Image (tube, rainbow, N blue to C red; front, side, top):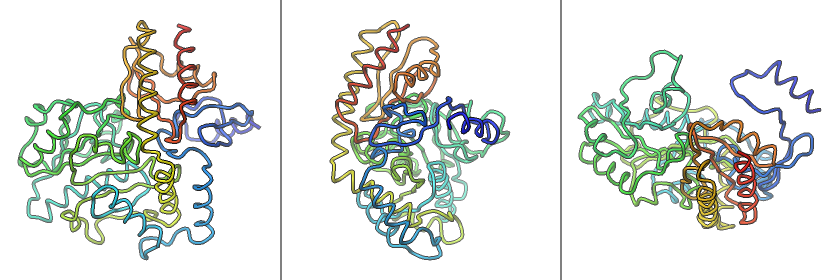
Length: 398
């Protein structure tokens, strides 16, 4: 069966990805199996998506019950799960309003439109510029791509959306120099995800808040990878004790079901009146039920505390590897269960991740030198130890 499926992929899938010749078939918790019956420990989690693991019984029950009751009615009508989800997210984040969509890129697009139209609606139409950061990643739509601070993602797509200034991540002086009366907002990731898993330096987010206030701009947080408990707090920027004006969520929010959200304060609630923005599938009952199940499981199983505890265990283990293999490993970094092992030189990350996969461990890569570890938040200490032993074995091979 595997070869038949791979043949279909070769003939009919658009070839914009580089998947290995493996077809995953089922999962349970942190374990997944391919169509040949091989078992893998999943420290990728669909790129930080499967927050409660695979086939969690409570998640399966909630989604199954909802799809048997009501799946989609569009935003012409309310549906109960979506209203309850909006309330839950606002309660947990301190925000006042929630707008739903299908993905992280869409959530970031909503942030960008919100910021520009807020100033248009309040009589400051010249405030259209964004300050964003080198190494950032905000999505692959044309607007989100313009805010992404990595040229490799923009190459070949022609002129992008204008009005964006990129500066060095962590450099408050550079941000200050970039500010002006035309700046609508600063957009920041609390931890650079695709840029190599780089946490914000101490005081950086607080400094951005002060600069945004000083210049009358908004501070926006891209919490796509860091949100929904991945760093040990519900939102990544909570570690820095700052308040933002609006933020984006996706990935872990749906636990594997596509859902995104833009959350904002009441002062911005009038920026996007009816007809200015929307999403056909956004906030449908099935996606909302999936997200509510994730939030319920986070609470019932203490997964924020687990993310913090197991993140520390993973950090210690990766740091020990760096000390043991200094010729191969430069350092480990990250926050909670969003962590990276930064390799020296110009490593063959695809080759190394392939050897990890052959030994039964799934990870992703970030930036040019980092192996990224984003296991489901239900990960156990024994599974952390198993993953570390595989990484040490592969890196010790030379």
